[in-house]
Length: 451
View (cartoon, one colour):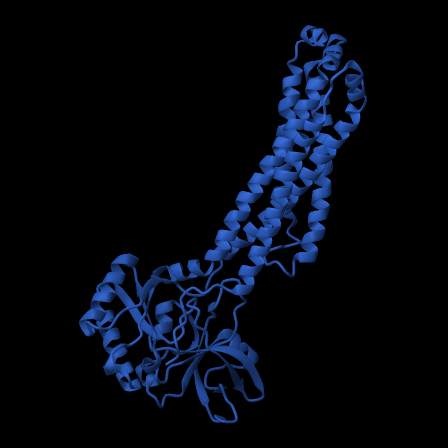
């Protein structure tokens, strides 16, 4: 019997890529928060006006300082655009991944890990007898629609790869040993032929069921039912030929973000190789789990059930690392956006306060409040607009370069990109509009008297 791997083992490559994304996002956030937050403070700390001559010199370089502030705002907004767009693309990809059909009925299937223990289950015959008694006990439970066994459960971390061939054609495939009733329990659909029966589970049984991918690859222009297929043939075992009795739809076995591949299901000696019990039921998962454990205890009080969990939970656990990274990335993107908005608002407010007398003069000469508001908004939004353009251009280039390395970056998804850039633009616009609205309410006489 194959060793049972730990449940919910994430794909290391995907996890590594997600951590790279988060490291990139965190770096940008630190640049936003530390660099652009500390620089104005450091500059103001070094600036002191101790005399009228110093004040005049300070006024002389005010324009240069305003340009520096505008440049900082531009870079800050550009970095925020990069974070929001990349984070939005990855989050959209992750949401799409959550909605991906695994190919089986994960909602109503409960899986249990059962490894026969004790001195009574050393031989394959004893192993098979135990699972036969367990299946018989579980199938009569109230609410149980069907039950079956498998040696390598999808999303458990257990994968049995092999080579299959039908004449000159060969292909890599997932090769699983399943009992009669397993495929029906998982909700896999039969497209051609028949299901496994009890006779197929005998040691001499030669029937196999293939998925549509394997059938289309080996016999693209003919029916697969009745064809002979060699499973894991090798020089040491050249005659392991089986007969196809059915074709079923494809399921995802290792991960939700991997493409579906060829699969072959064997039934011979299924109970002797079983390690997982699957049960389909409409009863609540916790209630069904207790009932299964009690049934197995009645079969053998000393036989432990190492794990009972719904297939939905297994799928969710396989995405746990990515979900955690996406959550951190979302928080980081929101913080970067908030910092950019605060920077735009702070610079716009400061520049507006320095132009109070100018605003008073304009209003005294006949400028309306709406004209003043539009003037301040336009000048404040200019730096942000430059940052939006620079950030969008650099992000598109980065996405095109890194699309093959970081999963989920869709360069051509311009609809989502437009929404994300629009969100940053709206945030920057609000940050510019608030000081402009306040400037439009300035009393001209009070502004003219201000020193």
